[in-house]
Length: 122
Image 1 (tube, one colour):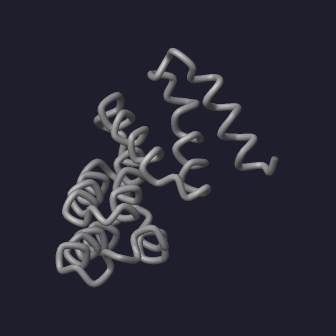
Image 2 (tube, rainbow, N blue to C red):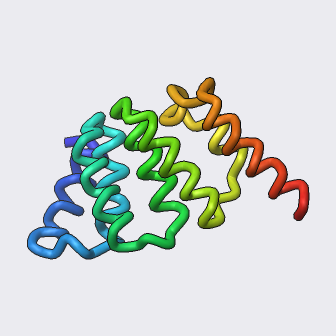
């Protein structure tokens, strides 16, 4: 068993019967994604967005899951929401392989523009 499989089993056991334990849901979704279990990670990310509707990192991760599943419109909407909520890591957005399928989309470039303008004002 490798490290990712260990993490999946560990966090699945922690979550057994209590799917509102955010501190365990976040690393489990990440481990699912690393293992290529994108749909499982996406389901958790959706639930996290419901539990924490004001958390920019949750919406950023949701955008990544949606992009990996080919849900472009949803991914762009979630990424925009992450930025609206305060997500500021432009370098990460531009280099994140999970978002690679979005990088030529006009809506993605618009989100990047919004973030660049916001960062210039700081």
